[in-house]
Length: 199
Image (cartoon, rainbow, N blue to C red; front, top):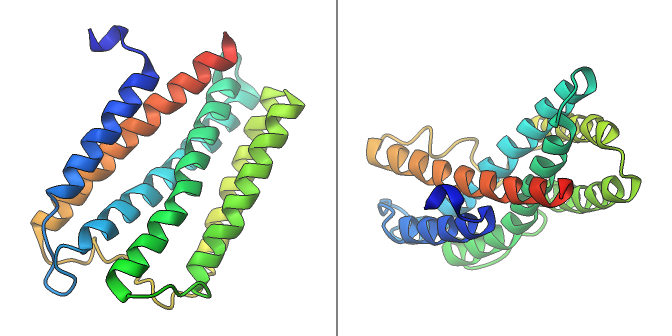
């Protein structure tokens, strides 16, 4: 039955699963249960980044091989852009919940906002151009620019890798499951977008 279900329906169901997982997230010593918003924010960002990476990889493959690689790159890029853009309000929620205020000058927040605008403009331009192979190259260039920028961005209120450096195996394990659920949701969204593009 699930195999025949619409990818969009599976995407919605997986978002419900993600919400349920967040409610079950282990509290943390300093932030308490408010850390659950941070878990969700982190999983959302990693889903976007891995989606952009997959879009770049399939786009580069599509430059050299026949098949649906360029369309897949396009769909993965659109799905990743959705997660990247929607991570911004989650970031604001995490700031307000845990630090009782918004620090909009935080460098990572500024980079996130800049690349959200670029991602929306890029995906819109790709749709208007309607050239799938070019879309793959553009998605690869976007991902390279994002990684390069993030690697050079100062971290003020944003620790480098709070989950990975956590001494709690339950927190690391929970976060891995949460990221996996988000990735499955992103994959279903990409499947739906690809099906619409080739229909």
